Image (cartoon, rainbow over all chains, first blue to last red; front, top):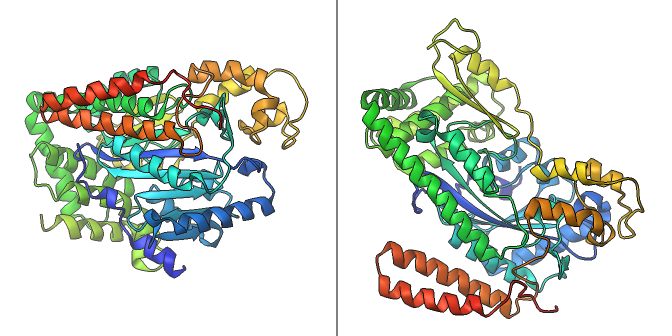
Length: 352
Length: 163
């Protein structure tokens, strides 16, 4: 592993700090813009030589931006599978970037709040992450980054359809806003279907934490806008803020309702979760997602001590396999992982 | 409650699966949950994918920009280059209309020209407005709202001039 990759792997993203608005429920918000160069086919149709040119050129220009100074530049082809998995676990990159590693690259600022993905589904995807629920701030940050890159290349753009993207689902603004929400109240109150269906009617996509088609774990949902054409960026963001804001309100109401209905049951769940996190000597992934979810819910309702939202957020990333192996400095089998995971969790929970 | 899968052991894990648009909620015992964890979820297609497949007509010319054909579109669910949007325009427009409910772009245009500045200003004002309302600073909110209205009235739906 290169020195830069090792430094990136060890870095906790600033937006996992848990200090943003509604940080008890919303882990983070991301705004993403999809951009392409007008003179080249989109990545999946482009020749290797074209991809190499694009990757080198964009990566160099991005690294020169003051916003990304002192940050990271990673060639995906130079990452062994575990490092790629690390990027996935950190929520920085998905399969479109990692599945075909040649001439794919990632450039990120030092706190990992601004991230540029090169030659994934599109030539360039610019992302801005914010702690908590902050869609407008995320939008402002990504728009500024786009302005900075604006003069660097001729974008694929048409007056009629706006920014042209490989998937017609991103055409127009190329803007996708998404937030990672912890919604155990709605799940336990069995109201989650109602809320998710309403969101789908309003053209929002809902997924598990890691992105497309992943199983929902630990009551963590990723909600994002689906339509990108015909409304300007500010309108998309205002709409997102309004509707996802309502989900937060519903989640709070569901929690209060559950508390009235069965306080003892919730206390039990939260204390059991906490007890496992603070004491268990072998923790599987699934158990950890659940215990973190229950303890977080309990902390939100002030039923159990709260180590801080930042601790919960960082552990959600760091309890996963590639992070555990990185910390151990070697490959771990299933049981060793469970052991390492429980050690990590105890470190944070035993003292609280 | 007994485990929904084996019906033998006591359920301890609430398992939630998303398969495409379908959500399934199960209560499982620790053993069944552990097995289940090994099974990867069925990847959900982009919602646009299914309708791209449906909407595309018979074979036609390849895109002169990248050689993509209708069959390629159907297979990859992606366009090959910027030119494809022109080549396959008549096929794409109804699909865009169905998916996005719009067919023309509104918003930022390349070049960081005035529309971008205006947009940044609108974003900043909306942000300020939200904060002002939350802080119950209604006088400031009213000023911001008026300024926002002014800016929004200045432009029609298509605010990108020629590049």
